[in-house]
Image (tube, rainbow, N blue to C red; front, top):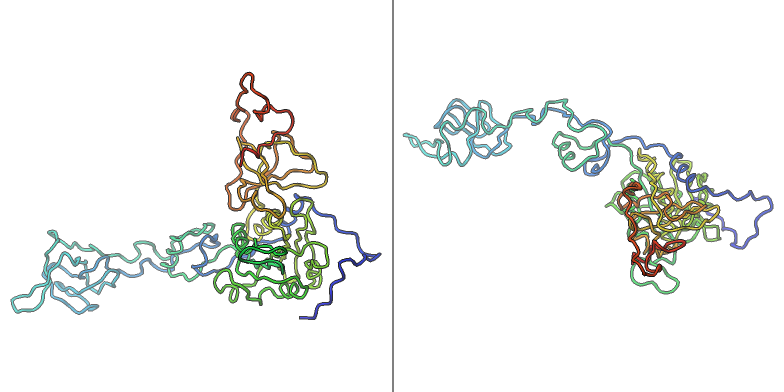
Length: 469
């Protein structure tokens, strides 16, 4: 790795010939750009133990008859003909009136016509004192019939039968079936491998932070959210705020084992398709995202989004095909950036569609904010979306109890007006708006009651949030 040069001072004056600052994408443009820049990852084989929940790309077929040999369905004796039976050595071919001990799943010896259950036979001796097997215990007359308690070869599937069709989201039973059929791995649709690079020298991961420190809000949950969005998070590392650490973390994302999130996958798994960083996307002297990407020969796909919170979100592509998604350092801002840019990117790489947006009726009037989309966590109240409280860029309380996120356009929205919204990765889908006939009516105001006691009777915007506490 070449030694990095020192970054310019934070207060350095811009050069006269510096290019004009890139205009931020609108929220809609950013979502579409993140989705359009990525091609689906090709299908490939994965071990069965890693295939749960993956989408099957090629049929699982029976490689041979299942079962591939005739076997016993019971513990007991393999027998030929009617009893009493003379005992033969296990595995030896059986002549008429011979039997041999067998266990469940055991290979039937040549000549075996049926299996006598252990509780249906008794051992005795013949006139010469030799051991013989006879019916007894729970045996019924005529038992065992030919073929009784035998698992025939091919009775579950014949060689070439389709066991699980391509396009199936694999469940545990299907993985067990694949193992039974002799598969060690299955071919599934590609899924983006993600590495997390968490930054910040002031971040602590346990205990109460002192002034000047903040708790790590990303470490406990970001990997899980990435997986909810369709990524496969195999590696998580923490670095400080120096440019050298940034460059090293991005330069060779596959060589830094770091703190493995999923066993030792970081050391032996594939290199990441996406690197997600936290912090460092501003434009101060300690924000190194853009400079590191430029030094590695990358290009910026998205350089800021005209939204709040989450404006300083950045998406870049490196020459080796890796994407680098820079999230802001504030937790709510980061989650909004991840939903805006990360969700479409991961979905495109994983053969999915751009995450849906659903209109919901707004429970209050929200004033315009020209040139900027506002993402507002909301609670559903009487079928209407009411902005949550405690939704500053560094807060998480409002999002923790939210039902979704409103996408408020720059021109604002009126009380009762429809506003786009998207679901949270861990939450239910946004419900379809109710028709005018099915919308609940506000309770009627009693005669003589004060108008301030009925939110529906107030003039101007209605703040429903007080009812959510």
